Length: 289
Image (tube, rainbow, N blue to C red):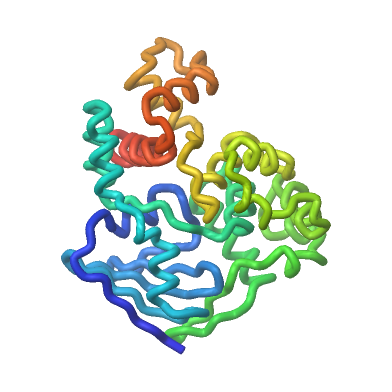
């Protein structure tokens, strides 16, 4: 059944900042500037008018509860931005630029698979692969005259072969997706236990056991899934570039090590370094280019 929900006079909530900052792959912009996405068995359209945000779609539970959880609405992002902007001028500019970013509480399993697919890949291609995977193995949801597909569970991928994944365009990632699915189904890693563990390093080490999960992918999973660990700093080419240009200033960017960046991020941004990374990354990629 279709449900609707409105949040009036909301701060730190810009659709483009949230959906185009690199954290998610199943949200698409509509002609009217709203975004439609499929997540955790829900299909939702999100539209902003002035300072009000309108949500409408098919939800598996009460829409208010789903929206508050998924969009991390109980966290004070204004306070976080103020805290970060006091660190230095770079953070002041980047938090202003990405003022509407919120880190989504995405399903852990979906985030794992999505970021394994994201390795050495571009966003349109990642989106295409995830869509084809969902169409083939997920469940159908009919809404507004259109068919959407939920992200498949590990169980729904149980009988898929390496070749099946290859046929969807996964390339070298096919075996990784196959092996990780098998590991989860065989409970070699229990995803539910990761929520109970307080030490981020322990959780990270567990994630690194999964096929196709290296340090950067593990950090993205920690930051962007509903594990919600802000004390990680995912490092890719853009992040290395921005950290070198703004802080390290090495003439040869390739000589800047991950260890050096991680140490700096930890000293500078502490336990909210993951958020600092998002603002810097988004600003560097979108604005400076």
